[in-house]
Length: 549
Image (cartoon, rainbow, N blue to C red; front, side):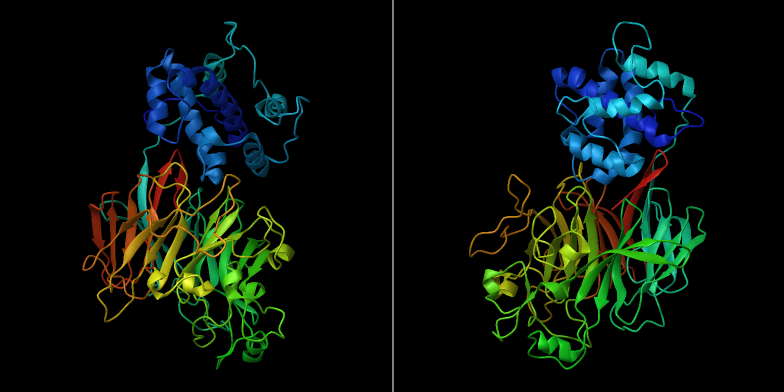
C-alpha cells in the first residue's frame, strides 16, 4: 500500500480534501467495483487488487491512496463497521464531528446521502464536475484535480509495541525486533496501559501519591505527551469523592474515559442493602473528562454503578427486587469488599459506532457493556439513550450466578482482565476479547485463556437474553490457552487483536509478551525481565497516522 502514488496539496485542509475524495469512492464502488465482483468488504488488499487490475489503473490507484488516508483521518472513529456498510446517517454524523455541522437533506429528495454532502462540499472549491472534459465525472476528474496538489511523499509502515511499566516511570515503544524506538518518562509509575493517539501523542495513566484512595493499580493522575515527547497535560483525577484507577481510554473526540472509585461510607452501603461490610464502600464509576488546560479538565459525562444496584434482602428499600428478574442491575451483596474496593474494574474500551463502553470486573468475574449515548442524568436512571435503558447494564458475561441465572459450573471468568472491542475490518469485528486469568490455585483448571466472545444482538442492534436464561453465548468463539500452556496469575495481563488479525498477549507476572495467529501458533515472543507490564499494546503508523487498540 505504501508504494501507491497519489497526490496531495502542499498546503491544504486534510479532512475536507479527503472527505471530498470519499464521495468519489462511493460513486466508484457503485459504478465500477460492484459489477466486477462486489463492494469493498473490509480487506484493503481486496480493494487495491481491484484498483490495480481495472481499466485506467492509475486512476484507481490515486483514488485508493486517498481512500486509505480518509479512512484513518475521519472514518477511523467508525472503525467498528466497514466502509461499505456505513449508512449515510452515520457517515454524516462522523463528518459533522470532525468538520462541523453538516446540514441534512439539502437536495430535498427526502434522503440524507452523498448528494447532500456534495452540496456542502461545493463551497470548498472544485469538488465535482467533468474536470477532464471527457463527458464523464469519474476518477479521471479526481486525478486531474489532485495532480495540481503536488507529489505525496511515500511513508513506510511502522509497527510498534507499546510497553508501559507499573514498577517504573517509563512507557517504551519497541519494534518487532525488540529494538527500542522511543521512550516517554512519566512523573510516577504507570497505573495501567499507555495509549497512542493518531497524531503520535501519548496518554498515560499513572499514580498520584497524594490520592485519598489506596488500592490495586491505584492511579489518580493522567499525563499527556505530544508527539515530540513533551509533557502537555498533567491531570490529577483524584478528589475526596472519586479517584481514577487502572485503565483509561482516549476517545475520538479528544476526551478520555476513566475507571474511577466512587467513595461511599460503610453506613451508606448498609443503608443501600449491603449485609456484610467492615470498611468503606467504593463501587466503580466511569468518568469522561475533557482536558481544558495544562492541569485542568471538565467532567462531561459520568456513569455510576451505585445507581444500578439491586438487593433481595430488605423489602423496605427502594432497590429491593428479584435478582434473577433484573440482569440489568448488579446485586449489592455480591463478592467481598476489600478495604473499600468492591467490583475492581480493571479495563475499559469504547465503541464509537455503537457508542457503548465495555468494562471488566476482576472481583465479580464479569464483563459489562453500558450505553454511552445517554446524558449523565439518563446514565443515572433506567431509561433514555439509544438503547432506551439509561445506565443499566446492556450486556454481561462470564458469571451468570451473579444474577441468579446460573450455577457454579457456568462460571467462565476467574479474575478477568482486559475487556476490549475488536475493531471493524479485523477478524471478529464487533466481538469482545478478554483475558481470563484462571486464578484457581490448587485445581486442575489453574491456567489462563484469552477468549473471544460474540454478544447476541437482534436486527436492531439490541442485546438479547431469554426470559429466564443467562446471556449468550454458552462458550467463546475463539480461545487461546490450555492446561500448562500459559498462566498469568491474578494480576493484570491482557490481549489485543492486531491489524494483521493476530493477537498480542501479555503475561504480567512472568514479564512475557507474545503474538499468536488464529491457529494458536506463536509468531513472536519476548521476555521483559524486571518489568511489570499490564498489557503490551500494538500500534501501526500508516500515512502518518498511528492506528492501534
